[in-house]
Image (tube, rainbow, N blue to C red):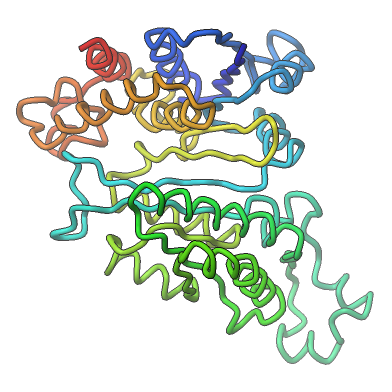
Length: 376
């Protein structure tokens, strides 16, 4: 028996996870229990706690979790899913489906994944906090003379960037495995390491060194190709040569930024899914936020959540994912002709003039259109 936990969270997260739930019911997965849990304001009203014990128990009892979005009060749930459960790798696919148009001229075949270290880097501040620069001076970490010369003794704050060998090893190994896995299905077998080791010699330098060390056997025994770029050059390369990349391994904050850039190459944040894996309870979520400005209006794009559901089903090895993949592919073909198909396309997949004329589909219509294609 497989157990899938659905948590809408806040804002449009609730709406798009409801869409994913409808898709799940249509797929009729065998030997599967769907568990609905609550977080944020809804949970607070129902249980008196934004992250109630009932939700934590549902997460811990699940094989995988589909999470919607957090605006404020659901942050505790998300922190547990990532840091509490030790889901150390964030996987973000960037794929240009047929029917979609990239803003990059004449590009037709973008299909790569970004693997982002999920617990360290500058985002270590989530666990250890930030601080006042004067504390660095007080404890002798920053010399008084340097504080005066370089920082003008100005009021300010610091954030600590932490890169460890432990985290670098396990995310690099995962990236190597994914590169090999993709190579065996016809992809180039190319792993690209992203860093800024020319400036951050110790932290980024360690990440780069460890990644190459972990890749050594895969290069020798499986003939994968490995290269590396500074993050600024990588951003430029994704614009100029997006079709050439396969698997990109990046330090936390770099992966966060590059994956948003990647999403815009293939249709935008409204169709950007993700997976956070590493524990026995991986979670999957659309990359977009809670979008409070449109929450409750019924116009949220559910496709990122549906694509995240597809990733979840692939992870749990459900054969029914082929039905969903086929329906998604058929759905995106409609985007190429908005004049004909605008009644089933969300606001962010129709031209601006259509949005101004309210010529787009609401969340429920998009969901039902995909369900119809599953039935075909």
